[in-house]
Amino acid sequence: MKFEGSLPTLKTTYVHNSLSNGQWKFPEQMGIGHVGFIYVIRDNVLGRCYLGKKLYYGMGKLNKGKESNWRKYLSSSKLLAELFKYRPREEFEFICIEEYKTKGTLSYSETWSLCLVEAPTSPIWYNTLIEKVSWNVKEPITVRHKARLNQIIKGEKFDE
Image (tube, rainbow, N blue to C red; front, side, top):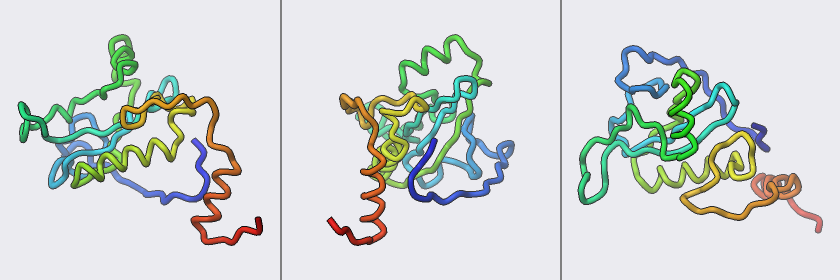
């Protein structure tokens, strides 16, 4: 996974035993004051990942306010569901990236993350859809595109 630009890094200490986070690796108790979280399921055997979001409580007519199955959740991916049928869970790592307080920010952060890693064109990511949209993507974002956009972000001038 190679990114243009720089992203912050964190040193995180997990106190997994005392938390009630189910299978999710996260340094704090999850689910308090937030609507949901962004997660990555890492396949440690094949070296691939799946990124998604999960709500803590239902928002629909039938399940509004009812706690979801977030502690044991395995993703909505049909491909991962097949893998989980035939492979032990110990081959996968369940990582909570971050929690969010609003549904809009949760959706945006998932989309932002999938775009950042260029999931639809990367062999590292199982994700092929972003917000349930499938583009017929046949080429990655070019290096020039990234470089020029990075110049704009940095406020640099263009000669041409």
